[in-house]
Amino acid sequence: MAGVPNFHFIKTQRDGDALVVDEYVFRVRKRVGTKKYWRCHTDQCGVTVVTDGANFLKIKDTAAHNHVSEEHHVKRRDFVQNVCQVVQLFSRT
Image 1 (cartoon, one colour):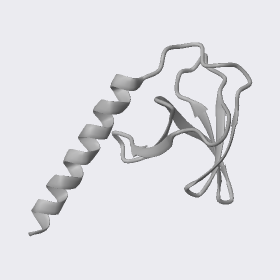
Image 2 (cartoon, rainbow, N blue to C red; image 1 turned 120 degrees about the horizontal axis):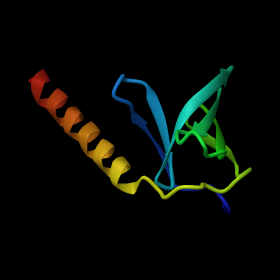
Image 3 (cartoon, one colour; image 1 turned 180 degrees about the vertical axis):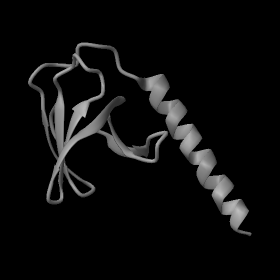
């Protein structure tokens, strides 16, 4: 992957954080200071990412993703997250 890939953060069902990079979902493996080390959420996949706050630092392509992207899963989670934000906005009024 050349340059900074397309990435954003989403909330998990348990209100945790997940990272989406080019339609692949990553979960936090460990935290060191402000850095977070993410691993692809598919257990057999070895791709890792490092972020510092909201800044993308690097992706370690030790092995290319060995599974298809989770585009439909990511779009569904983004939709649900957007609906929840709209409901919160209207419930405040």
